[in-house]
Image 1: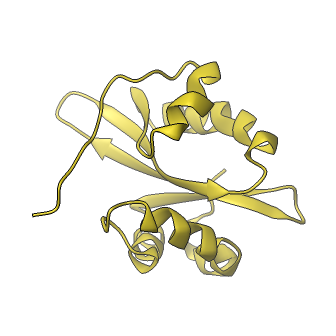
Image 2: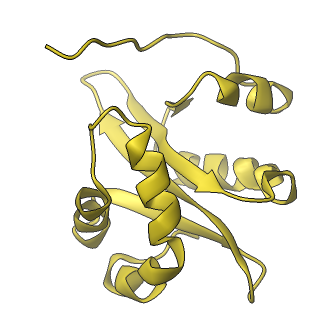
Amino acid sequence: MPILAPYAGRIWPEVKHWIEAATKESGGWWSASDVLAGIERDALHLWAVTDGQIVYGAVVLEIEQSPQKRIAIVALCAGHSQDLWLHLLPELEAWARGHSCHEMQVRGRPGWQRRLTEFGYQQRYITIGKPL
């Protein structure tokens, strides 16, 4: 389950450094404070990956509504020991289905393609950019 918006501030100190690292790779799209504000207004959904004692990472989902589809997007993901928690991806997918999403996307660095192939993800789109 994602961290509910009213409780995001409590877990934020444990995940902030990972969110900051992930936003540095976003090309300036977001700052960590933008992410926290989005979580607090329930526009972004924070998942803290923990075993109850150690926080291993953080995942931020965003739901995008187009005229035809509702898409759950893994917008940010960072942490350590990912081999211990990548198997949780089906839980994120189930949450997305429960929120009437028709598709799950992962937006990020090319390395995620290699890591997520075993979960059935394949390159369907590419996002490239150039600062103006």
